[in-house]
Length: 203
Image (cartoon, rainbow, N blue to C red; front, side, top):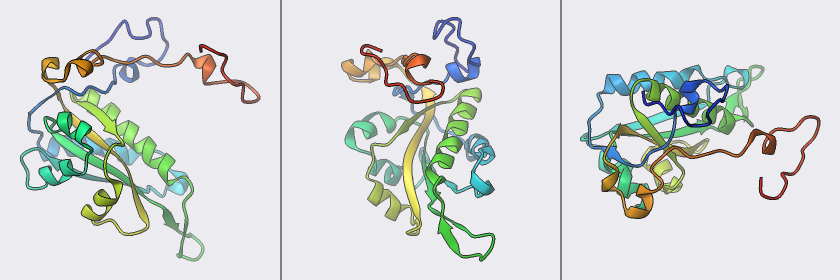
């Protein structure tokens, strides 16, 4: 696990959260299925409405038959750096849940929120295990939906790129400058008591 002691110095946020960031320079290392499943297992433990667990994780590992197919759905910008990674995990969720009363499918309004919670746990576990992740939304969602053979009541939200860090020099010059943990808006621009307060200019 990498450490960034100067990121938000003095913060009371747990280091395992502050140490997570999203690089693009990956080394072309392989990841075993056991290693990857250990990471994905963390996603199972996310909270979800009525414990419906709507999330689904569909993955491909480097140097396996599905690798190129999973890469092909990424937009060219993302594929250019993701092709050096070790795994791609597409995160999806079921948009309905089975009614406890009738057994019939009913809308699941929080399915995307729940899948996002699972995604965060996967990323944190990966970092704890010595891997890095970069979640992306830049991919052809229709092609991925069809290619992953999801039924109509599922939606694909994002892809998580997983790998070990590689040399920054492999990235285009404009991306090399961005290959570092990013900052965040101050908390007072995001949290307010009692009611929504628009952020002030410059915050």
